[in-house]
Length: 459
Picture 1 (spheres, rainbow, N blue to C red):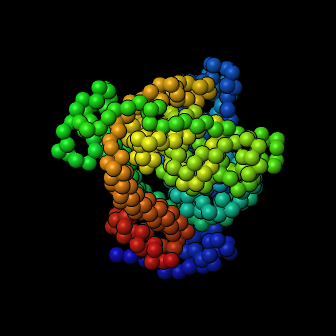
Picture 2: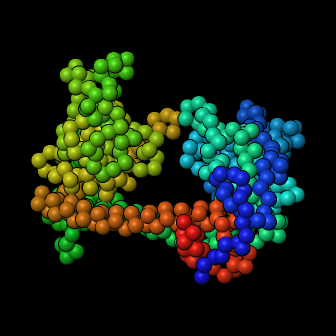
Picture 3: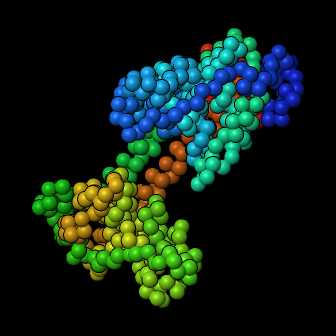
């Protein structure tokens, strides 16, 4: 089934809108809503904070309907005028923040709440249904984002005079309700499909870690005789493997940062790795580069191809233990350590071994201040690891590489499906709120896929 268009259209007089249904009005936003600003109560006044009143900021605007917030203020903050509540049904939008470089979040407040200064509460007037207003602002997000200014340090801000003058289509209240109901119904189905793909990605990540861990600690032969490793977290290992401290298998090399004051040390051709580069299993290039002069003057040293890089200090260690194998000689900063394999361990296997035993590495962390974590190097270097013979190491590394390629393909397919669903979701919303499709008789008929197909057919 496809969704029909309206029988009659008229020019809206607005370039981004084009033609709209003949019986719809086109009105500036400011004529059909009122707006309220927010603020932050004094952080030094403990009487204002950690109460029961929701206080919304940009980080809360990740859902369509907002029932609660990460931060809360007290009734005293409200009664003293340090904050004001916006009513149920207010549509909250971000008007200032780095997120506006990518998205235009729109949520409906489902309970009375306060908001901070980076948000605006848009309150529907008599001519608008609040739920339709929310869908309308979502459907016109590209036009909203065309009305941004720079607010310093990469932060974006809506030009409020321009945004409030944005011309928007306004059907009758009855029709608004039908459109909002249709979009509630259909986007819920699309969201369920997206959630299924996101669950699949999560399961694939678990499968990846389990595959690596099993291969590097149990090997590939399920019938191999086993022995007790003598290490509680490791359990049994194949009987012909050894269990050896990491420091007896590798050499360690530290990094550093060349002087930022010496301009001839920077922006050259030599890769210089830091934690922000540690997002891939293999590292052939880096975001930052230094010069050959920095190397010649011993401001930095190169680590060889085949070295395994790990993060030893940083906030990222609170969540994960990044491991990358170096594909070209490069320098590293002080938050990384180069682990250089000796004769008893293959570089590829070493990288998979450190990934597969990452949980044990993360048990060897200390606090380094301000939420930063740091590996206790003496404890980590003494970590006992399972070591098969070199030929078996190479077979295990090859097996893992093949499995990771297969799992990555499945993840890429899931990510492409999510991107397509989100694209179609956005197109469906825009089509419904601008009158490109007539949904009045179809809010209970189509499923999410059919609705998406109907919108795709219009483009």
